[in-house]
Image (cartoon, rainbow, N blue to C red; front, side, top):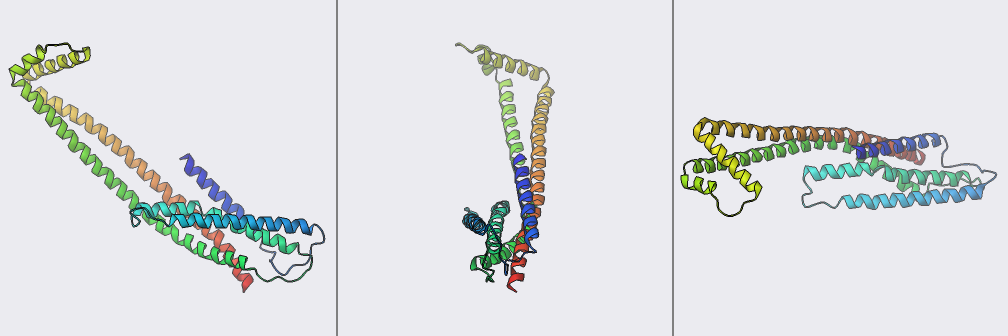
Length: 288
C-alpha cells in the first residue's frame, strides 16, 4: 500500500508542477523575442543544459517504453495488458519532465538572445509537440481500457480463487475419507489392535502418545458408533471454516487491490493526457 501511495503522490505532484510551469510560461512565446541586456551568456548556457538534460530524459524514457512492448509468453492475456498499461502510466511522468525541460531550455535560450532576431521553430521542438500530441491521445485512451481490464482481471482472479477453494475442499474430503476408512478398518481388525497395543521395539514419547490417543478414540467409537460420524463432521466443519475464512480474506484483498488500480491508473492517465495535450496544443498554436 505504501508503494502505491508513493507512486500516486509522485505522479500527481510532478504532473501538477509541470502543468503550473507550462501555464506560467504560456504568455511568453518562444519567438520572436527581444534581447535581454545582461547575463545572456549565462542564460544561454543554462538553457542549453536544460535542453540537453530534457533530451536525455526523453530518449531514456522512449527506450524504457520500447522495452514494455516486448511481450511475455501470453501477450494477449488480460493480466499482461493490464500490467503493461499500468507500467506505461507509472512511467509517463518521465517523458513529460523531459519535454518540459526541453521547452524551458529553449525558452531560456530564446529570451537570452541579444541579437533580437526572430527564430524559426526548431525541429527538436516540433518533435516534442508531435510526440506530446501522440502521448496525450494514448493516455486519454488508456483510461477506459485499463478500467475495463481491471474489472475483467478481478473477475478472473476471483474465479481462479474459487477453483482453488473447490480443489481444497475435495482434497479435504478425500483425506477425511481415507482416515475414516483406516479407523474403520482398525475397529474391525483385532490383530492390528493387538499390534498397536504391543508394538514392540522402542518408540519415542511422541509416537507412544499418538498410539495411545488412537486407541482411546477407537474404544470410544466402538462404544458409540455415532461418535465417529460426529467427530468427522466436526473436523470437516473446522477445516472448511478455515478454508472459507481464507477465501473471504483473499477475495477482499483482490477486490481492494483492483479497485485501487482501477481508480489510480485511469485518473493518472487522464492527468498525463492533460499535461501532454497542453504542450501539444500550445506548440500547434505556435506553428499555426
